[in-house]
Image (cartoon, rainbow, N blue to C red; front, side, top):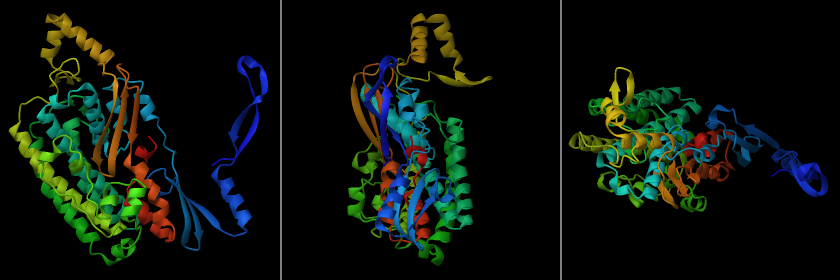
Length: 449
């Protein structure tokens, strides 16, 4: 809270009106802390961990009150990375919105893209028109992204505890997945690959072979990580019994993902409210009942293996649907139009250009309107959720019937999960704060969107 001092302001048109109060910030949380300490007459130490501290996973500020090495109070300070992504989306077309939301949680961009596009498709009423192959590609890319995201969590968490080898193995494994992303979308992150109605373009013909070649390598790296961490007495001593948060605590704080499943509740949006055909895939939802940091490491490793199971099923389905479309047939929605790789790189296919420029004035008009103005979405609102690596990611979209979202808002799991910092850290050691925050796996791009 901030202390505020009322003072007079100018009324409209330059007239001074002392009866209208306004308020300006004067001190904020530090003033409150100092005043409270003076009132209690106690000597206590308040330290900042972050927002530049390497163990706070970005620009997270932790305000810790400590008594020796014991944390007596912990508070989160967020907002240092605000980008205004959601507000910016309201000034762009529905398709352009993908290029904004993909940048929120930059370690899991494909989940935001997919959730947003599923919501747009619900508003358009074309959910059942999305080609099967497009849904398969979405599932494939999301599950590969889940593995890549968990690898960053495990790698950075290990590095923060001094286990540099854990980080190098994790990032080496992640490189195999990023190479696949680059082959499919042209980018390693911030892809804007999933679009309303399908995906931007089909996967390259050799990507199935590339993923099958990477599969045993990734499994090998996961095995090494398991060997390095799970039976390591130092690692177990740092994590077991640390950052405990039981089921009732998770439910009270709306915490989802691996942190919730570490309490024994097998809640997973892919099973509870399937999307993209997840109900047709064979996979398990691993759980634990230890509810500590160690169990969350075990669960994330197991989730990587489950994702590889889903990836293999996707590859079989991709081979069975070769040549099928990856975008809805309605050309008034499908964007980008027909892409092809030519001598000048990548752009619209020559056949498409020849048609709109030479044979069909109507097609040219639709193309021009789609690119410059975008498609219109019927009036309404929708909420769509997906199972993000950090928990349940929700998208709330409101349409006023125009070519841009009237309102776009995301329920990012990192933001909700950070509420647990106080209950997980208070009463523990300062060193345990690093472990507890790492087990939450917050990404501040999603928190401060």
